[in-house]
Amino acid sequence: MIAVVEHVIEHATGVYIGLLLLACVVGILTKRLTHVPYTVALTLVGLAVAMLKLGPDIAETGFSKELIFFVMLPPLLFQGALHIELNRLLQHFWPILTFSVIGVLLSTFVIGGLMYTVGGVGVFLVALLFGAMVTPTDPVSVLALFRECDVPADLKYLVEGESLFNDGTGVVVFTIILSMIVEDRSFEPGAAALEFAKVAVGGLLLGALLGGIAFWVMRHINDHLLENAICLVLAYGSFWLAEVMHVSGVIATVIGGLMIGNFGRRFSMARQTRETVETFFESVDFLINSFLFILIGLELQTLTWESMVDNLPALLVAVGALLASRAIVVYPLYGLLNLAGTRRPKRWAHILFWGGLRGSIPIALLLGLPEHAVIDAHRETLLVAGFGLVFFSLVFQGLTMKPLLHVLGIAGDASGDSEGSVAAE
Image (cartoon, rainbow, N blue to C red; front, side, top):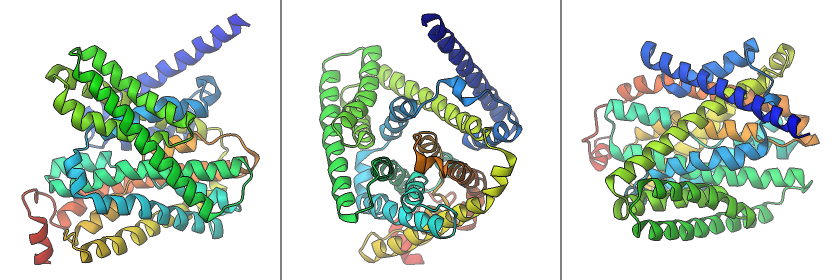
């Protein structure tokens, strides 16, 4: 028995080394031969693995739902929060809160409703689950273009802040709907809203407490390796403890990351510690993103060509639903916020609409779907529509973002004043 387990571990280790080698090759080719963002290249590689069936069976990787949620998600979330400046975040508090709560809920129901009525997902809760799954945005490629094109800092922080918090609320909504499906409960809006409030607030308070403790400890030591280890414990520990306490691990990890990124880096970390922590989590983020996109290719290669073709209509509906939901969320809410006095340029709304890319979080949630009769009945549709939507978002929206910035006159406008821009329009 021990020999069998050792063989399985040895084989899975070899598979992951091979996947990492593939990711490195993709990274080298991307840097040397193209100007395509790395996430776009990974998406294309995942598609190639799926279509040509180039990889091993996904079962050989030792892949599981727990691996996604408890190993891959926490450092992704922590890394995103580390680089958010809290004072900038507070300057955009109301737009970020509006888009990441009201926007996420609207998007979930618009996408879910369209997938249920015309997308071929015959169970309403599963359609809602899909809506929540693909709602979190991933601005990595967009933010890289923002830096390259010298866009206003306020627009960068608005996009980055929205993404950070709609990851949290999107995953919370996803988890609540998933529990309803697994426990065979019907959808009750009042109970769902109460549960959302409980797990979100609980995760926020726990993350703030643990982040504060980590910050206090780090103030009394000066060791870059030890402090990096404390940050790693905070990233994973806040997620794990929150889930044990039945509150949001995602929000707890995000808040912990914000605490360290704003107070820890400024008041307790020496320069070497900051460099160590930032480099470590950037490296982990690179590895996990690489694994996620290749793993989804391995998952998709289990489907037959007939199944992929049969689910193309669902994919087209999903893409249409994505664009419709984003338009419904961005333009009315952005207009209302400006009427309420936020005074941001109207043309920024077009960037928020087209820049709401989907990436690693939807892929992680898609891979983390558990085995359940109701979910299994729609798994092929969810896989094809989910990956296809991410593919469309990263490739088509991502690669057309730079021309859009130039057409709107936002590229090179970093010194522009928000209020002046509004007045001019």
